[in-house]
Length: 372
Image 1 (cartoon, rainbow, N blue to C red):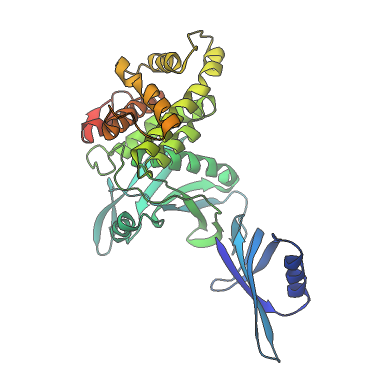
Image 2 (cartoon, rainbow, N blue to C red):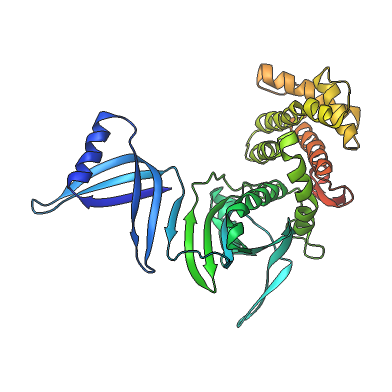
């Protein structure tokens, strides 16, 4: 997030400029006021990027261009204890069709769905310009807010809700194949905006239609089923298998323009899973063959009941060739092998997350909607 601050050429401005002349990285904080509505803004840490001086002999102004490396908080009114709060989160690059209707004076729109995670109901709603924004993103591979997540929580629970939101967004990122981030939080009470937080969040370029779950399914609302089914297992096994990191590797892999890049990132996701397998088996009192990449992969698949063919594990040999030569062996089809590996990992991840018997999109069968 970039911040521009303009102030008189006075003692405080000179102090910052002198510090900038003496070092290559100047950190500072910002505290100020905003209007319409009135509030106080605080940014604990910014880095000075560019400074410039302009003006007349009567009035000289200094402009600092800064990059925020912490959240920006804007407080309009204090959050009181025991308040019920309506909390909104802005989500980037989340493209979906709704399963539920929003009703307004101008009509009814199928633009949202709800899901209950950890006993808390979350509602995901498309932004008013959702279709136009997503179409532009498909062309630009950029980042933009396309949806809002809303939930109601008591003020005492406000500090704990962000982890739930982060878990939901990484699961949805994997389901839709693109990096979804929560970049702001707005807190309301009885329709009044109390506080806004602009997150210093990691974002990623939009990736079009690399779905694992059908985001356009209206009859069964597959995204809701996916979230409510997978969230409990994700919470339980997240630290045991580094699932948030594994899922991020798989999402980032979708951004690759070359099969070699995608294949290696998917292989890295598999290695990340396997790096946790020994400690997980020790935890549950299981002893198995962990002597090689292939044997560990077979143990993982068998433990979670992933139906597979031995030939699907040949990705390990292909991965070794790419690591040492930078390209696929001449005797294999790069696209087919990349798709085969991704399908194996999709089935593996979904089984780990407890999704057996439910619909997913099989990338190896032209993204047909099939039962896992």
